[in-house]
Image 1 (cartoon, rainbow, N blue to C red):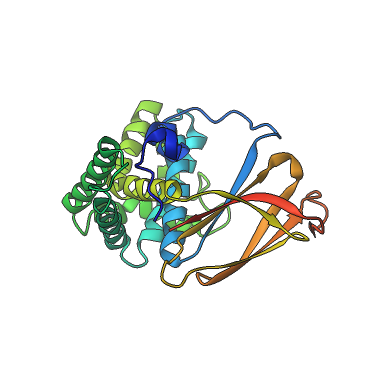
Image 2 (image 1 turned 90 degrees about the vertical axis):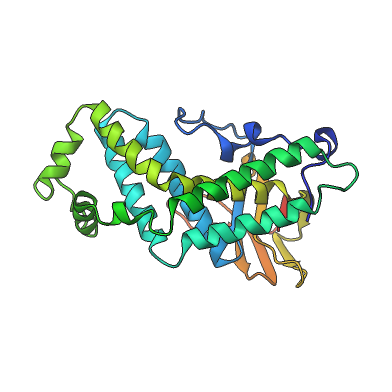
Length: 289
């Protein structure tokens, strides 16, 4: 495991304040990126990581839309909330998060007495993980039951399975709620967010640590193809592939947690199929454990 808790100059560790996964919850939409900025693509390599990344994806959307005063954003926020409830209804999401918190805390404690480690930074990260664990334990195993039993949310959920099924004539109570003052809608959304926050923010914290523990390295895909074989005794959680935005290339990843194949495709337009790159492609690969 590569530790980010050595001195910040040596490790390039930015801290939570500098990482996109730990941004303030209600923030304006990001500025359009320039073509010179690299694009980073992520590929989870196990089912648990796939679930965590889907939750993070939905939580970011929900957090953004919940802070907007217009009814269309409120509608989008409810849709994201229902998708989060659907994901967490499969398996034991809370138990999986608690196990991952424990795993990371155990690994981090091993670094406490090692030379060159930034002890203050390490203690801060450990303290954050312990706080997340306490919040999840305090929430209890049935912390989402209140949302699952909500007649209002269940009616929207059932109609959402039908294309266009949440029109005003299908759900007049939903239409009425969407036409309430923004303050009233935001209060309801804040209450729902408070219920799922312990889980979703724990997931965001775990993914942030997973990403930060990687050691990026520059690689070359010969003829647009690159093969990766992983060490069997060190399970890989996530791959991060960064490539220049101006290249008009993107990676397609196939494989498993034992080996993966990358091939770079060239984007043409929405009207034509992408084609595989035939030239050598330079990219940055980060393997996250």
